[in-house]
Length: 263
Image 1 (cartoon, rainbow, N blue to C red):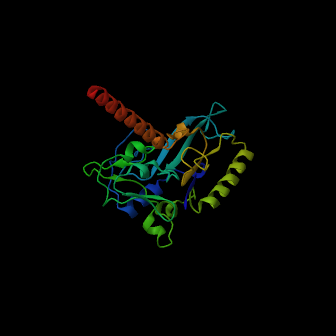
Image 2 (cartoon, one colour):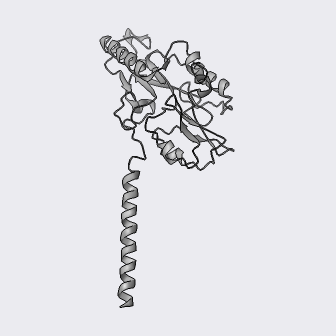
Image 3 (cartoon, rainbow, N blue to C red):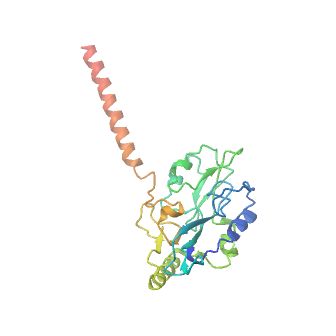
């Protein structure tokens, strides 16, 4: 199970942010003026499991007049709005590095933190290729989206998807969502929006595909997303083999030195 977020119909209402906080009893994380459009969250954190980005661009969308007119000429101002969340990677590095088993894979294929087992080591924070996982200030433990595991367990959809008024956030089986996303992408290309693209939907990418993927209207970097994410623990097996080989060589060298000294 997972999310497909169609950013082309996101209206930036932040209902998903509010629903997430209310359902999961997430503490308030600072109502400050950031001067970044209408974005007062800035990014995902231990106290913001959903983040609605507002990106202002001086360009038009497929020839549409999106910013009004001046002197008879169309202005190009447009907002790109997108609700970001934990990607619930198929190959999750956070799972690989967790020493206590606090992070685990659920029967729905999602990744969840058991905060009562988390020891606050923070290994998972740099391991995440998306920079999603964060330690809570004054607590030390890590927190992130659980894809409302408690709601899924009783047959309900996640709070954010339930609250989304435009169905920008869609929840369901990943195979069905990928088919739906492909049809939506074809529709947007037919409408002349050539820059539309899917992000995180491909099972053959660097993280084995995301459990939460997106339809974007620009490059991933514009939304603060890495263009080519890779599971950060992919080289660990090879590294451990090299460490073992180096240890064996060192042991052999020491043994040889003692042998020569005895002679």
